[in-house]
Image (tube, rainbow, N blue to C red; front, side, top):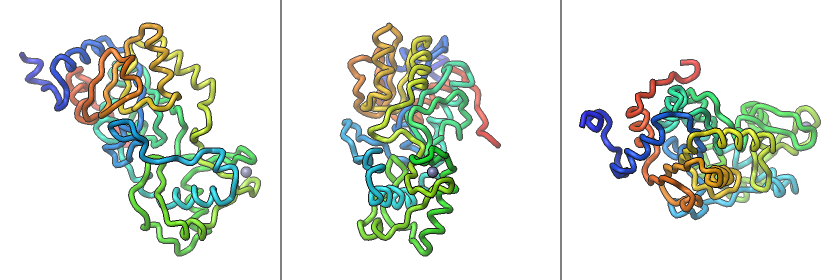
Amino acid sequence: MLESAVSPVPEGVRPDQWDGLASYLADGGLVALTGAGLSTESGLPSYRDARGVRRVQPMTVTELRASHEARQRYWARSYVGWPRFAAARPNDGHRAVARLLAAGTLTSVITQNVDGLHQAAGASEVLELHGNLERVVCMACSSTHRRDDMDDWLRDANPGFDRAIGGAVRPDGDVALPEAIVRAFVTADCPVCGSDLLKPDVVMFGESVPKPLVEQCFGLVEEASALLVLGSSLAVMSGYRFVRRAARIGVPVIVINDGWTRGDGETDLKIEAPLGSTLTALADRLGAPAVGAPGV
Ligand SMILES: [Zn+2]
């Protein structure tokens, strides 16, 4: 067959799944729901392993708000992790999603990721369910600030701090640190009101996604030809609810994830395969054009 010669079935995907996937996508109009699994090939780990077991216990917003010690812990870890997190670049999966958007295969992307890598790959129409780590918000006066500015404030407050310490960056963009280093860390204050109640402008554990955004996403899912879940275990309700809504109203649910998902019982097609190579082959098969990254 000429087609298979042009776009071979990617590794880990059965030929019948590959043809099924292409037929769901052929007429376009899908909405993608993406999670941390899409960014692992950029060096950012996901929250859960392939069996769905959580790797890290993120700090909740209640803990962060409750004590200065918790904010010391959060910002010390974040300060060490930020250069590594900010250095992450889009991978083949992000580029393929941007191509599928440009081709109209996807109408929009709902992402649970806070890394901005979809946009860095040139994707338009990205709805960030959990916000973006590029921003910081003051819990006292609601002013917002650039994370890069926060980085300058923390550097000024902690001269001589060795940012090369610690292990690998974690999904929230932080790095686990010894207690003594956390205790010695000096936090920054809000430049507007002077409070140290600064938090990343993301939906932390214990917080809810803003209702208007949820409603907007429900509307997109309801109008979609299918919902394409990419690299999410769907373990948290903020993403899983869209799968449930789609399944309930008869919008097909397709999942590509390199492991278990909570929605496995509600999917019309489930493919367990690496995201980058599979999505690139898919974009090639559908003839999606290349997309330039912003500023390139
Ligand atoms: Zn403030």
